[in-house]
Amino acid sequence: MQFYLLKFFLCYVVTVAIFVIEKVLFMLAYPDIYAGVGFSDRLSVITHGLPMDFSVAGYLTVVPALLVIARVWSSGRVLKYVETGYYVLISLLLSAIFVLDTGLYGYWGFKLDATPLFYFLSSPSAVVGGMTWWQSIGGLLLWVAVAAVIYLIYRVAVLRLPLPDLRAKRSRVTATAVMSVLALLLFIPIRGGVTVSTMNLSTAYFSQNQRLNHAAINPAFSLLYSATHQSGKNENLEFFDAAKLAALKPSVLHTDSSAARFDTLRLASSRPDIYIVILESFSSHLLPYQSGEPIALSLDSIARSGLTFTNFYANNFRTDRALPSVLNGYPGIPPVSVMKYVDKLESLPSLPKSLKEAGYDLTYYYGGDVNFTNMLAFLVSGGFENIICDKDFPVSQRLGKWGAHDDVLFARVVADFARRSGDKPVLKVVQTSSSHEPFKVPYQKLENPAANAFAYTDSILGAFMEKLKATPRWDNTLVVFVPDHYGAYPKPLDSMKDRHHVPLIFTGGALKQSGKNSVAASQADIAATLLGMLGIDHSKFTFSKNLFDADAPKFAYFLEPELAGIVDENGYAAINVISGEVVESSGADPSIDRLKAYIQLINQDFTNR
Image 1 (tube, helix red, strand yellow):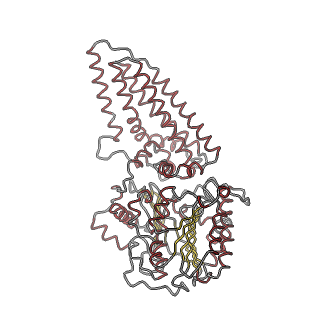
Image 2 (cartoon, rainbow, N blue to C red):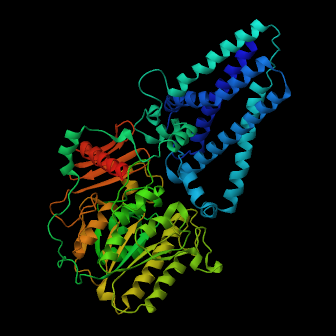
Image 3 (cartoon, rainbow, N blue to C red):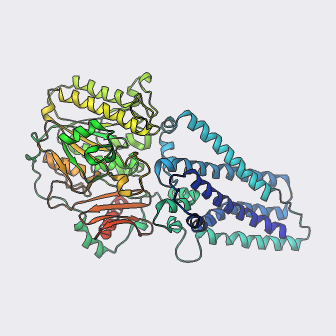
């Protein structure tokens, strides 16, 4: 019977060993990120990640345990084929998870979750189109190669171990009983122990350096955890009891209950044409006006002549999570993508819909696939009837990895100037895409591919603004520039605050105010601010604040899969939303309770929709 026991334990131990090796390879794959990490910290990555490795290994050992029990009673070839097939399957799965996690981490800065699956299911062509041919082929070859190595390890260490036939019935019964008990005991590492707390992502957290925590997390567990915790209800975000939450609520929520009034101090017209330009992956680090590098010089010039919010932050980290912030005033909660829940989208307040009710015509421009991440459902539920996307451009103009390049996109917007008839105000939202990975653009000015892509889109913005100024309606036009999510340049930025720092720029002939505004704010505040300027009621936008309302609390909120941050008059803080622990802070009182209360209120609101 010892061979049966040995095979069971070998499967478990070898699987854990594979996870340990993957952690080492993960850190080696990013020498710049882990350059200053010593041996003791690398060892801590492995040791603190072991409980999660034990858990996943427990899941993966259940089937081999059952096969060993079956082998006690049968020595047929079918079992051998099933066993071989199982190890081939998990080798392919573990390889795919490892390759995806390692490959995407350099772009995303967080561990693998269900997001890529959501992206692929919503628009496979957009996902594949976002990769270069060598990334596609290289990724496929790497997946197969890693899977072959994993399978070889299993074959040598586990599959080739012979299991002698047990002739005596008593021996078979005993072996079955013992193996059954061992299979049941796998529940302990799977659960994470026998205490009240169960296995979760915070188990691997041990350092103030988030990169070390990320390296310790088992990507297979991260993916599984994300996929099974996407119901829209997150009990981990319930920080306070009802009384404490009610006491904190005034510090985060404020809705002006007085009659909406047109802001004559800032606008020359109560119903200007509005252009909202959503800039793919831009950041404040591209503008010298905000102490950045001289890359987006056209936008920098626009910022200098317009009204620029210098203490402004992107609420989220991906476009599907950012658009509800910009257009719905809904900042989101980790780890939920609001756009995934079409039924809830329809109940959200909507800036476009509010403008439509006020007499505006709506048009959305995007050079890519609007089916990606449920975007089409999001736009339609927001009131857009005229949606320009990739299918509206000839194939010869869809030369970018994400569809039509930004020059083609803005050429369409400019062409629509001539089609304009009547005096009805318009809202035109333009979403750029060329400054997205892989940063391949028809432009060559800067050596760094990412910086060059931003410079390209920036040059298009400058040309667009000159053409817009030449139109008869310029004096009745308001233009808003805002990035979709945290910036892709420069990398890496270790501070969450630095990553999310983006510009918000108001300009246009209808704007009467210029200069810098240093109020702490984020994308979710755009909706209430614009509606407040126009004198349109914004009381439904619970989580959006009018930045010109002196009575509104002044703070910025932003989040990532496991982190949430706040900037207010006291300072800055970021917490791990799973453990509640502070991971970054600066200032005398960074208002942790305010941050937690805001998250809990959004979570409750989203759950109840």
